[in-house]
Image 1 (cartoon, helix red, strand yellow):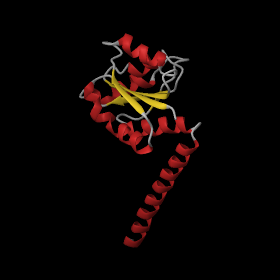
Image 2: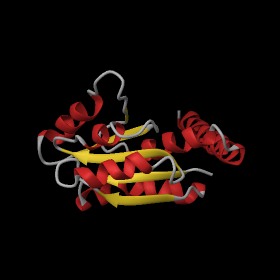
Image 3: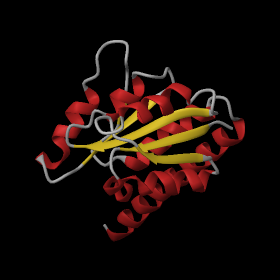
Length: 162
């Protein structure tokens, strides 16, 4: 199974990234997490993304706040799917990070989730890897079925209250 890379622009992003780490562990997907800044460690960020495919990665998650150039910087050096997580900061409630992450130039796509949408970033990474991993695809289908059952149970509870 391919691995997922998780790159944070700052160690302060770890709290926001933790749901992705937890989900990847739950799904049995190997991952590596690193702190690389698009601005302060651009060579290390580029080196990671440039070598990610040959190092066994199938997708990369990049989380950053404020200027949030990390996902684009990572995507510029790889053809692997990159999923950007705009992290909410005290500045503009994460809107600045969202716009910086989603507005990529033609030919350098970054799939962008919601502000602090870390769980969905990990879910999307898992779905990308599941394209070639049938066991993981089954796990994801089971998770979807459980989500459906949970919502339908809540509907039954609502109907009983009415």
